[in-house]
Image (tube, rainbow, N blue to C red; front, side):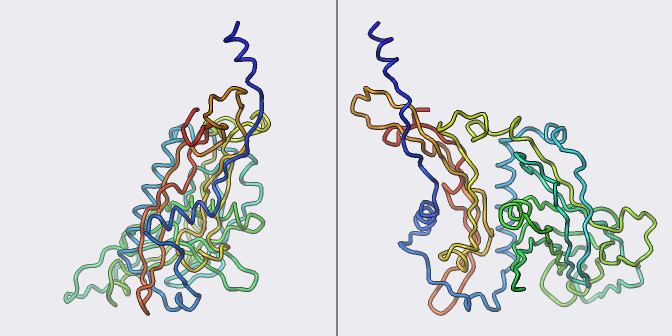
Length: 361
């Protein structure tokens, strides 16, 4: 009876939620870099800034590993494909195009249902091989067989001062014909949290696979069908870019402990919390990539036993977290350099009730 009495004394008293705030993120970043305050980076420090190829490749490598690690927590590809809502293909419009750049726009209205998550998004471009006569190999140069193709999300501004964020980059064979796919999942996440009321804008950049004028010249021979909208194409379906979305219903596949309509009101759970680096005063010039990310946070409360034996109140807090790759600027005297690192404890993976930071889930 005494045990039952104590059990019944556990009242539904809720503690204040622990939020994964921007201050928590700032503290984690400064601790990683061994700094006490963010560097004083100004807009003029970004003028004529060029991201070195090895830095870009290092960031992309980290980003791809991060995306793979994140997808381990969702169902297999077969499960994802079964979870597609209606048509997953969105045909894009070509805003402008030249030999090295093109801007694409996708009408996303009503394409992503409420309470669903885009787990993967692919941009598919159809590449046509250049005529052999247009490729004049130079014996004095090393052979060039590929071009570097990078995809950027465009943050459209009403003032016209658009900003871009790198989402994927890969080497594409110059001499082959066929579909080429790029992972633009990160772009969908940026768009859905900051500019959902307008079309999704992507830019395609075509560059040489290595430094030098010959590699750049060979890269200019790479042509996607979308760069020649007026050109006669046998298969009309190959004339425009395709955006393929793979979505999951969070009601069915949501992570354990995520907040949803069925969650008891006030109980500890994890909810979405997007951090926009472009809007924070201390990161808008310091952080180059990503433009922002889904950090999540813990909200709600925990049941409090009347007899806590001196251990304190149980509160809703971060139980598990994950790192995030970041490309950022470093001031070294009068010079500004670009570095890449993986910062720990940036993403809330799981929330739980704890007493004095001791997990008690």
